[in-house]
Length: 470
Image (cartoon, rainbow, N blue to C red; front, side, top):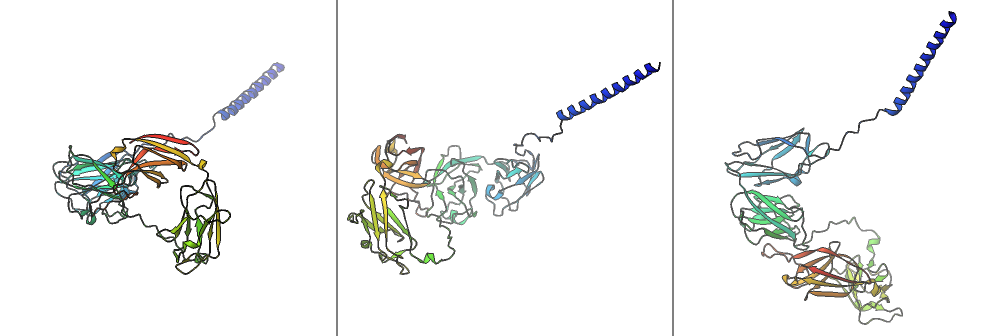
């Protein structure tokens, strides 16, 4: 009896131990397969805020108040409001616009005109707080009268010198038809151009307008600088369904003045120094050699400078002169292919405006490039007759590298510097070989350049040919 009791105890203990082991194994395996991980947060929010309510509603007639409240479905903020905001008609006093939590509030401070349609274009200035998703091209329209004006007017602006668009340009409409209005007062209506230079006015009343375009860097909304990009239409426009699109050509009469970076005069600056265009030792066969001095030259004697061969035999055909700045010396010669030259510069060939000579005489040694370093090019143009006095321009780094008047549809050059180029056709009306800006006071439009969409790659030691339809 005792033995049976002992067997039962042993069996129960064994079952208990086995059960404990099984629970331990389950807990170990389970902890390895079900680790606690932080939540991923879901996909990134890419949706802009949604307008839930506008008070008063967008398109309100007989508007009487001075406050507009826009309520969104999430927290919003305003960014670059001054760059985006356009109000037509232009108010004398700008409104206060701010954001708080999920609302944007516009407080009008100007006296509103009777029976007038107002358009507030906030562009992309309203964004959500978390991901900066913008409400694109947001506009709010109301009328202080019984109807919303609905006339439209459109056109295009391109840069006269390059044939390209500039998205920073604004287009102005003036009811005041005095020629000086754009110089003295803000426009009645404003819109911006898109990436292709196109623009469109909405909600215009019937009337006659002057049209201008301006790069308004001062923010004053008036044309006040000869270095500002500016365009004007030759005639007035009357908005409507039958109004033709206007083409404007923007120009600047003068290049913007470079900001001075001078920080004083060091001891080394007091010396007359120069840099040479053939610092790499290889002179271009197609261009003059140039030497630029750090100060203007005075008492310049070109006869003291000699271009020679390696045995110091001078080239009598060489021509040496100063440019109009009197800081760049130009050496012109009929350069020979793959040839060594010397330019002998005595120290007393010139003095600067302070009477300083070069510290010592110098001999510049250089070699010309080979003809195989260049490519030949042949272009056949179609529809060239559409242009008056056409000039073919090769452009690199936004600078005109070469210009060639076109007298026939077939043009070719034996030696051309290899590289990638943009092409333009300039209508050179006065045939001086360069682009000329306009003059609003004289009602003179700028000369126009037309960008050719296809770029051209010129390979060295290669016959490059292209057909271009204009």
